[in-house]
Length: 314
Image (cartoon, rainbow, N blue to C red; front, side):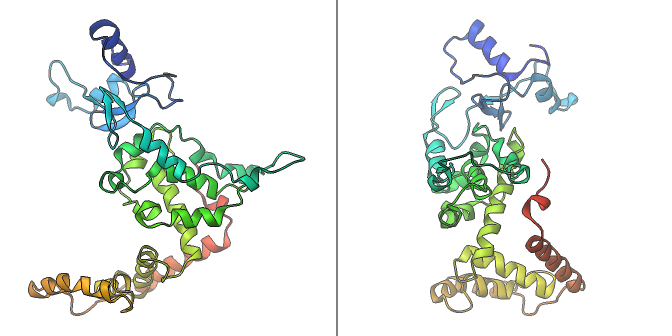
């Protein structure tokens, strides 16, 4: 093979000339359909997009064997049917769980089209580029350890509906996406979905936008996940960084309201005390005032600026 050949061309040649039983999915051959997603040298990518030269470039020349190898494997987090073909049912079921279509009420326009301004439509551009290839789902650490987590692909699509001016079910959607680790709070922010997405959808960023919508509507008592985020910001504003003594009490013990949560902290606290790792005091950062000013400036900007003006340009 030549360095300019794509991985998909390599697989075609194997199937056509060496082993006709090799099974893999393909369709458009042009980075549009997402069918040929697989793990190439340990990372999820599109076989029609990656080429031999780029893969060889990842191997330092002094470590490159006379006949270099490129390792191809099926996507992760999905059962293998045969060779590189995986069972995508959980992927599609989780997408369906977030109801990835404009609400019925939003579609009921009897006399005219439902028009959007260019600014309203531009809010859908980035997550609208998703081709459902499964690369992000394959690399999702949260999905690997928590089978109830719907996955980054579903939540990236969910954000498209939250941001859609035609949708009339935003509040009920946010309640659905706020369901513990099944929804947005299951994301561990490992950045792997952003790293492997071939269309620059940045699923983790989309999940963050949904979180922000939820946080603006909920107070600290709504859930531990929401309290975690709000307390973290409050403590950093107070001292420039997190006072770990207060963090556990305010988040897990819920300001001494959650007795069970407070008791769950006792074994860890005792071990820390025994090993001299429990901070008896707290030294605020010398730059606390500057940190507080930065946080308040960002919060003011978000509250006063239309979202489409502060969204990153893709």
